[in-house]
Image (cartoon, rainbow, N blue to C red; front, top):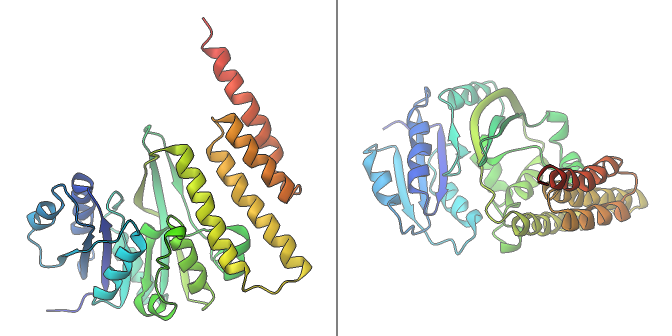
Length: 301
């Protein structure tokens, strides 16, 4: 049996119908030298039956209890992988047929960290195309001080790179941002990274409890930032840059809560206190104030 070039790691929990679609998108790849490792967090739905229904020896199932930490499932998948490259696919996302073909071409060209664009699909049916990168923004200092520009389900990366930095951090406090932390640790090794300017997958955004989810993600992002800030020289410039970066994090959370004026304004205020030179705060605050008022005006009888 030929050793696969790419191991696809798919953590899942109670996503049987969506997992089926995700696996179908892997089966449909024009590039066929892959294996898929489904790391099942002991789902109580038809997850096992879905995996077995494909009857494809390239698809493997591992039952593993991750205690709510998806990073642990991804790490198990990485350990079980037999390929030299790892691709990540969340069980509610999908790939387009040429994804692995396009990424493998870049691997054969000498790159060991490949990312591509995605179509973001929201639960309300709205969508937008998102291109990640560019390479200049994927350097360690840019990722740290400007923010993440890499998507997990759009990444194919050399396994040895991941192993060298110790894989995903399984600290529960980093849930939702453990990938950002990993990309920064890998970026510090100066990998040969490539961003393919094409939409090769679909990222399905599922809001859940929007307000609590945004606040939890902000706390997780701040935890990652503090983890990396601790290793930076304590110069005046770096302290200023740190405050500015934390301001950006609060601004981003506030933007996601624009429909909830009180919460968003509190976050905008915190962002302003941290860095009043983050100019995009000002128009965003106006929008946060005007949008609810305009909405209320529209629904008056």
